[in-house]
Length: 133
Length: 66
Image (cartoon, rainbow over all chains, first blue to last red; front, side, top):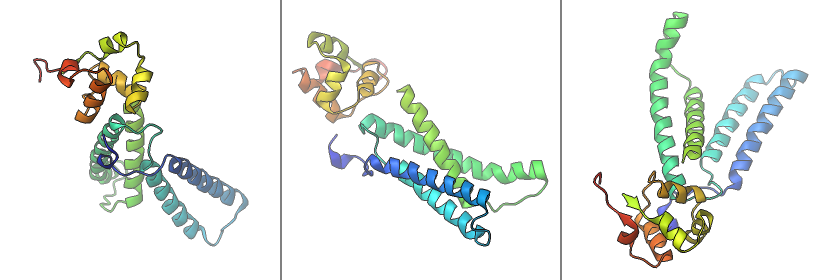
């Protein structure tokens, strides 16, 4: 397959940058809670954490594998479709399950929750399908 | 679709890794093609046949399910 037939992805080292960013954010959160940093700006810290985490997950998703061939691309596509379907089902069932367990029906779902769920399902299915190939 | 890659590899004394390096894919991709878990693209099929100096339809053959 020629280069222009592949989906354009970022180089493999972007994955390391993404993982590093997530680890840095998690470490910063733990330290700030432990030592009481950003006491007055906790909301800003929470928002920044959300944004950096989502961007890092996107960076990891869009990075190439060490050997990116057509089978990996096919697996990537399958994992993405599966994650998307799971995301749709999750967004439908979450308000219902909330109502069943808490008695409160709230149809407004946080976009970050769905995005993190989709990314998690994508990474898991991509990893499992790659191991099964 | 069935294929004779394993036989051809044995004739040419090539490992999966050797063949994978020659055509620029991973060893796992060659393994998947050999076990009929993945049908390669036309370009990859042509590269494989070129490596073994044969026509594509000598290596890849349609079966009753196709």
